[in-house]
Every structure is written in C-alpha cells, then in structure tokens.
Image (cartoon, rainbow, N blue to C red):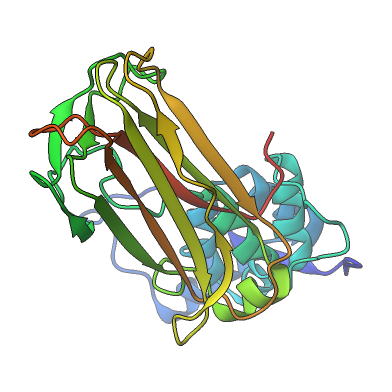
Length: 284
C-alpha cells in the first residue's frame, strides 16, 4: 500500500511540579502546554514504532489516541509487515487475506481446537458415541509417549468404544468470510497404541461440515488392526485438509476402537493427544 507522508502527533512529557506549591493551570496555560507538547512524527516512523510494540497494545490503547494513530493501526501495510517479520508466510501467494490484521492474530493464536485431548480432565469435553464392553476408561500410559509431558490416555474395552467432539469454527474465532475466501489448511493429528498382550483395532473419522452439519469433506481411513504380542509402540495418524471449498462451519472429530479378543476389562486401543488445528500460514 502506498504510504502517504503525513504527520502524526504524539504527546510529549513535561517536568513535574509540586501541586501544593503552585496553582492549577489556567485555560490559557493549558492550551499553551498542549501546543508545545505536540510533536510532528512521520507516519512511516510511527508504523515502525507500532511494529516494535506488542500487537495487543497497538490494537487497544494506541489505536484510540487519535485519527492518525488509528489510521496506522488499521493499515494493511502494518499488519502485512508484522506477518513478514514474525515468519507468518502465505501458503498460496494467490490467496491474499482480505484482512491482514485478522490473518496475523489467527496465526498468532493457532491452537488445538479439541478440549481435553490428553485425558487430564476425565471425559470432559467429549461426547460418548459408543460405550461398549466395560466402557471407556482413563489410565496412565503403559509405554512412554514420544512427548514425555503426556502421562494419561483414554482406553477402550471389548465392545466398540467411540467418542467425538464438534468444533464450531465461528465460536472459535474463524468467521465465515475467512474460511470461505482463504480456506486455511486444517491439520488433524491423533496418537494411538495397542497393549502388547491383546489384539485390538483403531478407527478415526474427521468431517468438515456445513451450516446444516452435513459433510463437505471427510477423512476416514480403513480400520487399523493390531495382533497380539505386538511392540505396543505409539503411532501417529495425521491428515491435512486443503482446498476443501466454501461453506465449512464445523469440524467433527470421532475416534476409538476395541480389543479383538473380547477380554473383560480394558485391553483395547489407547488414544491420546488428539488435535485439530487451523493453519493459516506455512509451518516453519
């Protein structure tokens, strides 16, 4: 965006005085004080200052100071440069954001949209779809997970156990215009592991849904089977939705499984650290 060489004004500082030793300022002296303490500042310098401030300070206190500051805080060039400096690069140069400030904050706040993915809060956040056998259970991991922070997992039983979450994208901050125009990558990940002494199976299904919660795109690989006496190592399932078209408003994540030997108790597949992320920028 072509920058206009205007002047912005900032308030200067003055020496403090003792309020008890001098009378309050008159209207004339107050006006004189204001005129003396307003200093012209080129807009490109003001933009550079804003680029060095935390983003939330630019949006809130700085943007409210005056019309000139608001114009700079809202400018496309400011947020485009901020994205470039912080390494948020477009995946597809032909898809330019309509709102660079929104693009910046969505990149900055990228996160896992699933609640309680590591079984740290019992079954909270999950909707039970199937609760067969002796039902879902939470246990400590049998074999260390690649991410040592993860200490718990959800465990299935001898009947089919599946659980699900429905993500409302607009509630999470991804508005319809952004999803339809920009169509950011949607990255899915899930970790699963068998017990070494019992065969089992694992299933996953992730659906991109429209406003009426009807599927637009689906990821549903074939069921994965494990034989008895396996190495019980952790496996990761990943998928990235791209170029899925307009109309995506919800994401439904469903996974689970069961043991294949019908043993009472919890000998089925174990799952943890599931994630669904909206990825506006290229991973670095």
